[in-house]
Image (cartoon, rainbow, N blue to C red; front, side, top):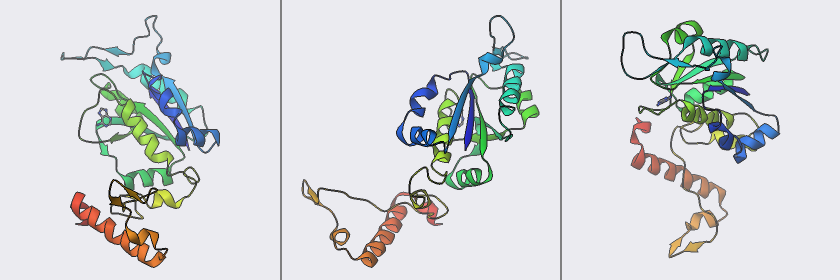
Length: 228
Ligand code: ADE
């Protein structure tokens, strides 16, 4: 899976990309992430990327020319044209089934990070990106949303998590539309809190039944909407 991230703040991605699962996936060449600075696609001396809105109003608007040129040049960097995604609070809400569809239908994503008060509408009219929101709140820019998107897609690439079943089993995934069961590791007892006896029993049938029941209980308590 290949990601091209287009941003005015490329340095925001360096720490994120060096974190363990992603950096290992990059090292193993299961995933590549290429970060591009939209400012490099400006033609004027001052590298201007934004301007005041026509008709007046607060804030600055990202200009159409550097953004469209940047996307077109980046698209040409690989034979796979890729799905162009714009991170914006106006977009389709990202959830696990959408992540699964994206990961199975596409090998390459060109992710445009929004900033300022928004883009010139012609960016959207010309590029027709898929607009994605990570939730009903407004971030200062699309960079954090892009990292959320990359992070949720990378773990669906076969082999990235080591054991393919571990993402299939995640809360909200198509394999499991309810929340996960609680997990424990050593020590067996801590400050009077014991690991449930059944998990130490070695009885795999009983463990599975306990986990199913706990998943359901957890979901009823925290996210009953998932059971409707
Ligand atoms: N940019 C600003 N807010 C956002 C959000 N909620 N989702 C995606 N991109 C955004």
